[in-house]
Length: 440
Image 1 (cartoon, rainbow, N blue to C red):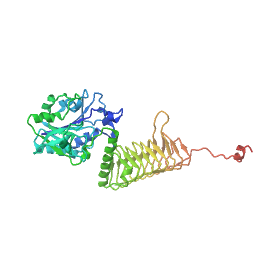
Image 2 (image 1 turned 60 degrees about the vertical axis):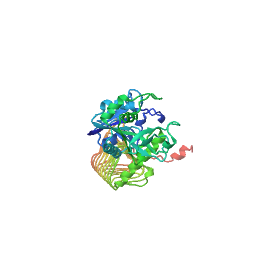
Image 3 (image 1 turned 180 degrees about the vertical axis):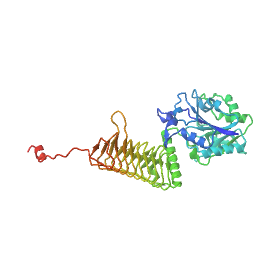
């Protein structure tokens, strides 16, 4: 059989989020919610991934290259969402149906469901899980052979019998179908219900009516199947996702001193024997090398090579590149700059749009004035440069190798290699000024 097609249903607006942003575009540890199941599907070896969106096509801009988009023209239920993507279904391949608001489903869970489906030899399988408190979930009723006979909804009183309410195995809303069976069943769905919608579980009823069995595969970790309907659930899922991210890094040899006081996005890479101290946030596509120390800092979309020290209270903004052995210290902000190997910016400085050479040391309150009110300009600082405290470098300007600047200088002209740049007014002292100021 061909590699599976994966449909990610994501057309719902999620009104309970109370947000102008579509629910599945809310951020979860540095990645839009909908991209979590997309990433899991790709990692699981999907031959094709298609996301089902609303007519506004709000998700199109965030989808990775190669991921398809189908539009559900009206909000007519999960069955209607699959109908909208029917043209993308390969009859000769398995079709996995995921939900864009169930982000923690893993590639391993998808692969295990596909394997269980193949072993069962049925045209449809569903992922289930066992909950300690299954209140509000549809209960899975099995026959003696372990096949699903029906899913009993429990939304209204009387939907289920007292015996059925004792069942703790619930429907996750994740399915796998043989493509030809799904294509054949979709035209037979009915909107004859109170909501006037097409429900995907009706496909199971259609197949059972045709004499086919429906298999169920129980997922051991119910946390993988948690759905998000509001911001409370989003916070709960984020906590689980963040814990998994931390554990992945720690098992790979990273020390996270206090995981509860540390935030790390899902796509961050960190090398072995690096130490992340409390109250650090690392976001975006940041890459950190081995044997670094990151202390109480905020790091976004930056590249940090081996043996670098950052913080405390540093802010590394997008485009920062700290080369091996560099140091960025207390209350230093760096943006879109390349800091050379072994270079030091110990404290109280802003370095933006700059190239700093190997082994340079920038004194406290060194500032690159990179914006002239109309455009950004770069500052070039050579190798082995020493800027004294309170130096302002007005870009575009360059400071040559082994050059120095005097304390309190505003450098507006290039400083040649090995030179000392002094750019400050000569001091004038007014004797008796304090007495005169008091009217004496």
